[in-house]
Length: 493
Image (cartoon, rainbow, N blue to C red; front, side, top):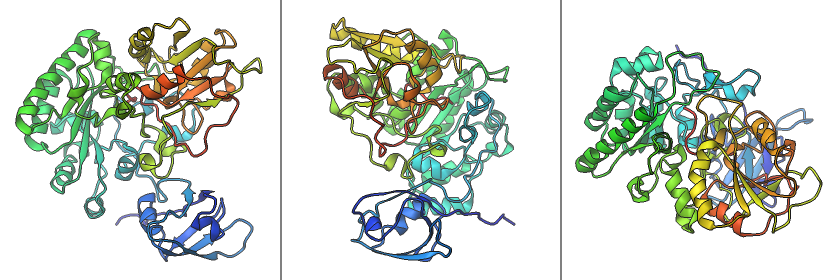
C-alpha cells in the first residue's frame, strides 16, 4: 500500500501590480489552500488550474483566524499575476541511487541543506531540465506524462547494459528502469539522454556498447550527451578520477564516429561530446553546424561555439543558460526554464565598490571566469585587439579537483582573487554562478571586495557589456530574474 500523498499549499511570494490577483486582494504570504476545489500537487497542475477565467480560491492569511474565500475574474488564459514559492507542493521524489560519480555526495559540509537534496523526480525534469534515472518512475507517472504531454524530459542513461547500469547507480532497479524510457518514446515524448562517462567504468568498449544499445532500442531519443564526471577534493570514491588527455581524446573520437552512424541510420547525429572533452583533449571544437541547433546547449554541448557566434553578433546564438542543476530546490522560479528570461541586451550592475565610487566608462575591464571559460574566452578577447580588456581566471579552490567550470565559482574564491585586483576597474561576472543572487557558498556580490557587473551568460551580452558604457552599480538584482544555474561549459555530474 502506497503512503498517502503529503501536500503543502502553494505560498504566494509576489503579486504583479494591477493583475487579476492584485485586483482580487491576494497578498504576498497568502497560502492557496485550494483552487476551484482542488489542491494542486505541483506547479504543473497549478498552472492548468489558474488558466481558468473564473477562480474560487480558499486562502489562508497570517493573522486571519479562518480561511478566506477569494473570487478571481479574468480573461481565459490571462495570467493570474502570482508567483508561488516552489515547483512541487507535495514531497519531491528524492533519489535512492548511490552513484559513485554523484556531485552532491562531493559537497563539503556546512553548505545550504537544499543543495544536498538529490531528486529523481520527472516533474523537475520537465520543469528544469534535471536528469532523472527513472528508477522511481511508475505506471501512474507514465499515464500522467502521456496524458498531459509533459515534454521534453531528460533521462540519465549512463549505460544500456543492465548489469553495468545497476552497478553504476548502485541500485538494482537501474537494471530494469530504462523500460520506461522506451515507453516514453513510444508515447511520443521528446526525451534527451545523458551519459556521465567515468574512466575505467563506462568508457571505451562499454560506451561503444551503450551507443549501440541506444541505436538498437532507443533510436527515438532526441539527443544523447556524453559528459565527463566532476571530481572534487571532497570525493570519497577511490575509483572516480578525472580523464587523462588520451582518454578525453578517445571519447571525442568515439562520439564523432558514432555521429556518422546515427546520421546514416536516423538522419541526425544524436550523440555529442561535452565541450569539456575538447578542452581536456586540447582539440578545436566541432563546427557550430554539427550541433544541429544546440539542443543540449545548457548541458555544455556546443556552448562554446554558440558563445563564439553570439560574441560575433549572431543574436540567434545568444542562448544563455537555463535553470537546471541545484536551481530546482534552491530558490528557483516556479515556472522553471519556461519562465520569462532576463533580457540578453544588457548587463545588470550589483555590488558596491570598496572605495565607494563607480568605475567610469573608460575604465579597464576585467572578465571574471573559470579556468575552462578562460580557454574559450581568450581567443575571443584577443580578436578585439583592445589592451583595456583582460581575463581574470579564477581557480576553484573551494571544490578543488578537476572543477573548472565558471558556473561553480564561489564567492570565497572570487573574493580572494578580487582582493588582489586594482580598484576603479570594471569587473564582469557571468550570472551562471549565481542563484537568486547567491553563490553556492551562500555569499552574495555585496560580499565581494570590488563591485562587479553581473552579465548574462551568452556571448552577445558579454560583447555589449564590453562595447557599451558601464552600468550603474550598487543596485539590487532584478527580482523578476530567474534563478541562475551553474552549468557554464558543463554542469557537475
